Image (tube, rainbow, N blue to C red; front, side, top):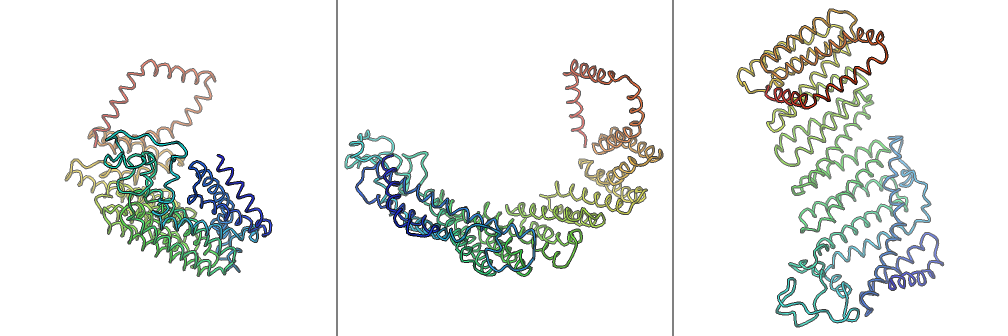
Length: 573
């Protein structure tokens, strides 16, 4: 504690003199230089605890300077979000005008210098790590002056070297994990290894150096085009660091992970900044897509490669959205264009097959398709078209055996939804005329499939065909004041339910039973309302309480019945 207080007092006293003579924006640099000068204590002969206190004071001063420099860096990264309110409004005059920030930039002139200075020192420490370890070794634990001679370890004790134990003082327990010697770390469990510490130092150098360059561009108010080119180039450098770090030694993953996160954040910032003009948007997002795709090709297997590939798909999806805007298309008209990238991901997934990157890429493409569906919601005909196209993509994915269980059901659902939406958009009041010609062949195909493969699921064989007619008819029946359609639909549902129970087909039983129950509820609802209005008000709560009492009294029996029903449904095909 005494060393830390002395260090802080020295910084305040020595740094206060030049700080008083400098403008407000440069005073923090004077204190930072004094704080960094305190690191020279590693070469002094101060007692160990005092030297560690002085180093703690130096770290506190450096941390305070970094905290002071963070707000303008956050403004540079998050400021381009304001461009979203007026896309392609025109190229700004300079970098700062595109940020929409009201920070007093003249008072923050030293911020990039602070970041660059600390980044340079961390980078030097990363480069010459063995020398840093050798200099800091005496400060790692109690010395003879602090705590007296160390107790001699027992011969053959774990963590000691018997041949040389008598030849010198015992090392500080746990310092072996920081020293970087092969096999070190046995005595310092719970302490980070040398590779981990070096990786953290390198990560700090990368993050602060990147931030210093971004802040320098904002403070110099470089032209908008130069800012875009610089940010995009920085993304490329960070991607190169992230790719090279893929083969780093175990525990030294902090630097490549930091480079990966910074590259994604920088890409988002540069992409938003480019939305100020049309040409810049295509140039930047095209470059980002190429950079991330190249990184995905060069990276080794693992999570980073998937992140690179997913980011490349996202940037490609943004480009298709920009193309729709350039063509002057309404959002629903641009929705089919947005399906180009999902179609490419389907083809890429077929190419990659069981590669670990295939699934993230296909899921990202599916999210792009979902965005296209959202854009088309405002126009029913385009929504039907987009749903049908998504069904085609899902069907193409279902060709692959490893995707068939999910993609097959999804394709059938999308085709059925597209049919319903198209019928609703055309204001068809008699949907059976369109759905029955689809249902009958589908059921015949399903019957042939079941005859050839008796173990095939009834949902695969009969589910799509039945749903194609039953569900649209049910939707129309609920709004139809006439009695004929509910009667015919209820009769058909009853027949389907009985067939499902007779032949133990789960799809027929559940689909038919559900439709029959809903039709019955629709038809009986007016009479139930009339009866409920004629009964005393206390009777419905009393009946509900009686029902709960009966169920509670026979709880075990009802539970066994529910389990038997579940088992019976599970045995059906």
